[in-house]
Length: 283
Image 1 (cartoon, rainbow, N blue to C red):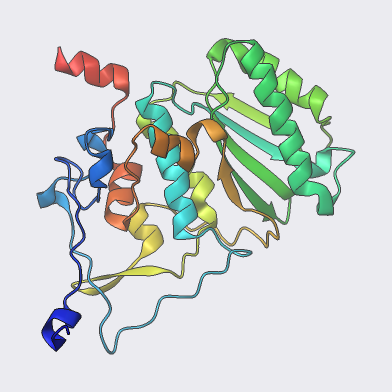
Image 2 (image 1 turned 180 degrees about the vertical axis):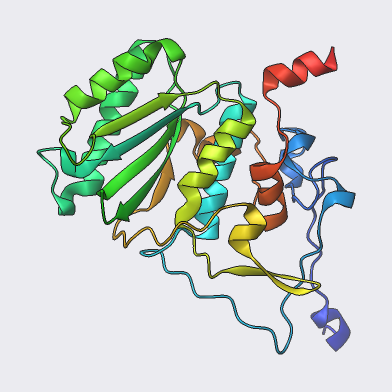
């Protein structure tokens, strides 16, 4: 018979923390396979202290996936961008697709229409030796209706060919109310990539907050994501990324997920370096 004291003991969890990755748990069997990059996690001294709620503090709002991006979706998009950047393939192309400029668009078929377009785009890029890496977010506004924002890895020389392909493949058209496809390729620096991502993530719940020593702090302000108004009701999946930088692909590569608000804030607003820049710095 086990004594009451032995019954109450919980089996300890075996885990370890890599240097430079504060607060990230690593399974022992995966130790040594993790991608170690101290730039993606704040040092101990730079981490503000977040507290658990106690009696008398307000409760965080319940998630509303059809109204707002969740913290998990913000985390997924941030990890996908950071993972692509660490591989030397930054998401340097911003694309906005307005679906009402597509003649075959039907609201009930919105998810399937986007899926078919992305499938064709992925095959088109593969034929040209470019990996299909991207993050997308759906929004709805009074002027544009349902539209999608996409951050894509794209060599600068393919800017015009990709734009022509999207217009032809949609098909999309322009009119007096706006354009079907807006596309802009940048250098893909960390500041540009995460600056664009923060704009894409503006559809998060700006009523949400985190608990601190001083009480609470607005989550949007904490992450550096500006409040630009509600981004409409979306009845289908609101955010996603391509398979090449999905959570499964990141896990197989040994990527340690950035989940807590402190590390997310550090990644979205910190000074990150590309793989090439880090190699140059080491020399």
